[in-house]
Structure formats: structure tokens, C-alpha cells
Amino acid sequence: MELINTPRLCLAACAPETVNLLLRDRDGFSRALHVSLPDDWPEDDLREALPLFGDFPETWGLWLMFRPGDRILAGSLGFTGPPDASGTVEIGYGVLPAFRGKGYAREAVRAIIAWAGNCAGVSRIIAHCEPDNTPSVRVLMGAGMHLSGGCDGLLEWELVPGRSRRDAR
Image (tube, rainbow, N blue to C red; front, side, top):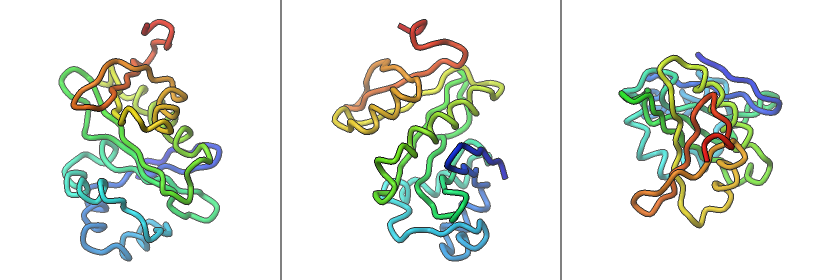
């Protein structure tokens, strides 16, 4: 299992078989990963996407975000699949309500972006959010991403590994 440690979080990549376990047996998933799952996880949009993550290579799908001391899940993040033909990967994330406003999203997004930026074949990292989702806008800006456009009513954010925000303008 791929792990990324940050000052306050542990990020753990879920293998396809682990995601499939979650789909069948939430308690078994919790025991297998030694992580306490709050009742409000997975959130609705993640629950709908879970079957897709069972088809992705381990590091290019679902990652868990938990505090290492108490191993309570604070949220999840990850990729919508491996890099495409152009080297683009898309990230997504969600922090559970009890853990919002503590900087966990920014910490986790920075870490996953740094990890992806060091992976062979990744030349561009993108993310999408609603225009009125001010917390997500702050997280993405704070993680070094810049606004690159929009599509279907969503803002698109971009980061090119090795290129500073100033260079991207």
C-alpha cells in the first residue's frame, strides 16, 4: 500500500481489491485498513464513484486521508484514473464536515500533487470545483494550482509539475 505522510495526516492508496471490499463490507474495509470510518463517509458523490475505483491501478484511484494518531478518517482524495495520453491526471478530494476548516484539505492536496508530480508520465495535474465553492477555490490556490478555464459550469484548475505559478500566467 502506497503511503504519503504529511505533518498531520497519513494518505493511503487503496488497491482495487480494497475498494471492492468497501463496496461489499464497510466494516471489513475498516478492519482491514485499521481505520475508523465516520458514519457520514463515504459521501454521496464518492459512493457513486466507488465502483470505478475498483478498475484503476492502486495509486491512481481512491486514497484515504486519516490522522495517524487515532486513525480516524478525515476524508478521501485521489485521481480519476492514471495519466491520459497527454500526461494529464485529475484530482478530487473531500473532507468530512467534522474535519473541515482545519487545513487538512490543503495539506492533503499539496501532498498528492507533489507525489503525482514526481510520477513518470505525469505532465499536468487538473482539478474542478464549483465557482461558488470558496473553500475549494482556496485549497486549490493554496496548493499552487491556477485557474485555467471552465467547463460544464465548473472551474478548471491546473498545475504543471516543475513550473511555478508565475511561469504559468
